[in-house]
Length: 231
Image (cartoon, rainbow, N blue to C red; front, side, top):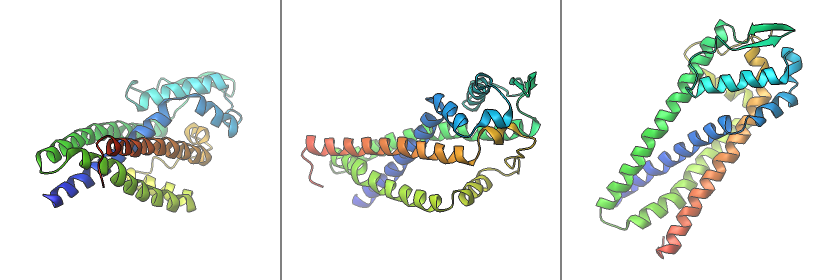
């Protein structure tokens, strides 16, 4: 039974890691719109687009509501740009690309829900097998999660060495078209979220993700001490 429990532990460990990652991305993107305002000020976005901050924040809120499925379209998002009121903010290419991004965001939420079910099944299966369920869960939370974090840390270290290279590779992997290749001269989207924005957002996600992992490891320690489990 030990090999099967080990397999269940590995599946549960990586399920928890991806649940934490998807939740971290969601929290980073949706939980605090003041982050976007700080980034827009940092990269002088309003000057490049020639738009007021209130209008830009309204565009941002509508854009994020669209990405999480609470808004059906971006074609009705308008703002005063270059002193021209009621100007559509997104052109056809940007709308098409954001439709692809929306699919990824919503798909990630569905994946997280599936992984939650997988995690529950792993725990129930471990309980049905011979051995301590508390030991199984504590080992997964403590050792399995740390191993998963180590793997994630290695990837972050590699990506940070050449963010632009892996950013482009990331887009080639996720999208089967070139709609993400936007032109600063014609597309507002690339001007409001330059590369520096994505670097800062990535750092934000890493911090939130790390806090989730620390929490899971802490739960593992508490379970071990509560049930006086030795390894």
